[in-house]
Amino acid sequence: MKQTIISSEYIHAVKAIKQAILESRYRAARHVNKEVLALYYWVGNYVSVHSRTDAWNTNAIASISKMLQQELPGLTGFSETNIKNMRIFYEAWSPILNRQPLAADLDNILNLNILLNRQLMSADLSERDFECFLSVGFTHHREIIRKTETIEERLFYIRKCATEFWSKETLKYHLDEDLYRKEGSIQQTNFNKTIDNAAFKQRALQSFKDEYLLDFVNIEDPELVDERVIEQRIIQNVKNFIMAFGADFTFMGNQYRLEVAGQEFAIDLLFFSRRLRSLVAFELKRGEFKPEYTGKMNFYLAALDKYVKLPDENPSIGIILCKTKNEEIVELSFSDTSKPMGVATYRTTKDLPQKMKEALPDMDELKKLIK
Image (cartoon, rainbow, N blue to C red; front, side, top):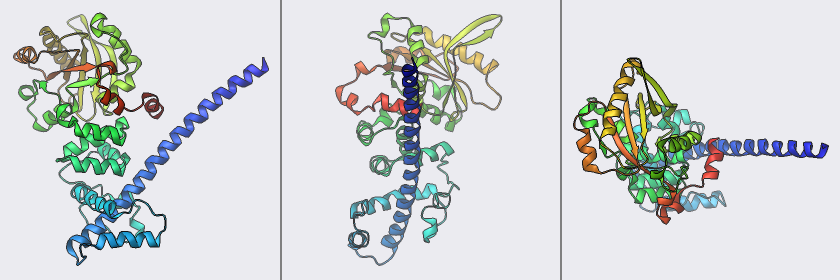
């Protein structure tokens, strides 16, 4: 009996220590990454200033790289190509991250508060986006800068890398597939006629995708089961579901109760988006989209705005999540709606092409990081 008790305690101890080690490694990796980004940003600034304005010749960066290798034998990461990448990194982000020239003394190289000036310019980088920026590795930043055109597009991939722990291969796959334009913004909404504020409208469009991967919903044929089954799978994996939409979403409840004129109504899933400052209602449908879904969602959103929304919050938004949809039927269904809503589809892992399955992160490792 004593041996059984000891064994049980040992197992519990191993589990607790293992979790602490994993969390410590993750925090350490994030800290090291910040230091590396700070150093590379400073080097990029120094090289940019001198190579663009001074009398450095065309071979200067190659010569400096070789001399660094001689001064610091075994040094990695400072090849001619990578030093040029540091310059690109600095020149791509300096208009947003700092207004003043960086000090050149050694003490400021690793001082993030000075190096990455928080007095931000017109791009309006949020605190959350700044945290995501610092948590993404330099090789990821390099790929993103190479293959994107706008700040918003850059931030889209940075948020994805930071919140979904994309590997470099996963990032390259999604960049090549142009995820930002294909799935980065929801395609079928009535936002243009129901949202007047242009900035809020743009954020809303970029906050939802046209299709979602719910790889934790392990159901062979969703059309043969009740929506409640899908809902319960989502509730059991709510962290994964939130990650599918983004870290700025806060879960408020399932079968969220609304009382109107003495009658009770229930919203499948209700979230609050900090980025949108808006309530977001999700209605789950097991099969194809039907026109009557929009009328029901319009009613829910009107009730949320009247009874739940706070005065300083934006109008509530609704997303109808279906297995399939007909675009013409969706558009016609939106014609008489007054509340902002959209229709998106979902699929499970078994629906994915093999190439994308291989690019997806391992779910066991992902769970270790988010627990």
